[in-house]
Each structure stands twice: as C-alpha cells, then as structure tokens.
Length: 51
Image 1 (tube, one colour):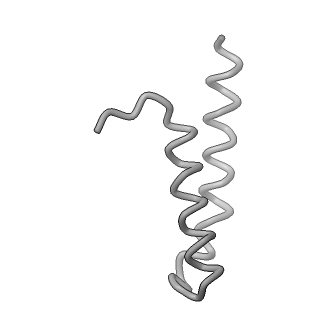
Image 2: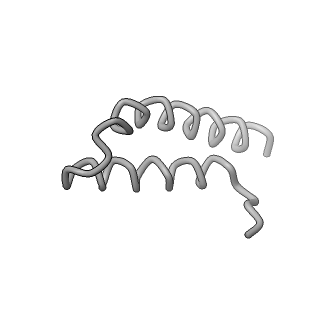
C-alpha cells in the first residue's frame, strides 16, 4: 500500500478509533484520538498550504 496523503491516512485511523471507542472497544486508545486528530489536521493544512 502506498500512502500519498498522510493527513487523510491519519484522519482515517482517527475515525476508526473513535468509531470503535463509541461501541466500547479500545478503552485505552480513546485518549490517543485527540492527538491523532491534531496530527491529521496539521498534515492536511500543511499539504493544502503547499499547493
């Protein structure tokens, strides 16, 4: 798998973690979700700014 947009990739991981946490899975990873959202946002902004 070749990732061309790291911001969207991290955002996808974030959404999966938040979705699974909503159903009661991954109790420990729920604290990691805000950090992933921050990283995804920064990566998307940097990529958009470069264009």
